[in-house]
Figure (tube, rainbow, N blue to C red):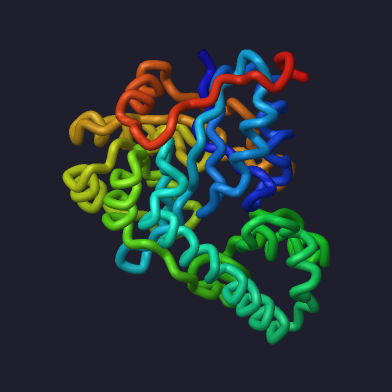
Length: 288
């Protein structure tokens, strides 16, 4: 089985619609794909309706968190999307995205970059607006060559000249909320030092004690030595280890199935989850 547990659609900052995502996942030879848009479940209905035969969809979300000033992401799988406490927290985070984006645009204007809210809103479409949409605007204006080049201290990286903070959930609270909604919590790309400061291993140990289920080990932003270190840490802490593409369509260079999750780990995730179940495909032929 080929299992990719971290993908984004136009419901947040990907470029594939939810329906296109599941069709492209099938065409890429995946058996299981997870839809994990940022702080939203808005893409679920479209994705579920379009899952091709032979593919299984795992519903999830990538939750924005912050610990001691360090931004981090928590992947939540197979939770009840209507559970009120987690729903309220997702809405709080999501509602802060528009004023944050407007704040970044204002800072960019002060730096002489003629980006506008209308441009960023057009790029975001129906998705939850975020830094990748502002970064795409910088690419359109010729300020930077790629989206990744916008995530530097000169522009949008944490603490950068145009950076603006948003509401982010304490990760221990996120774990509590995800588990309370019947979900499974996995710390996304914990060793992605190229993105900025990372959470120390001592904090990961504390999260494990608080109910964290796993950590994402095989990821494009982890060097081989980082993967080996994280795999050892997971073994010491009794955590599951996942692998995934963090696919964003054309917005990033990663491809579907670039990294995958062991079928036994996937089985354990589905065993632990009580809030929702994986969705087997009925929406069409494989690769349609």
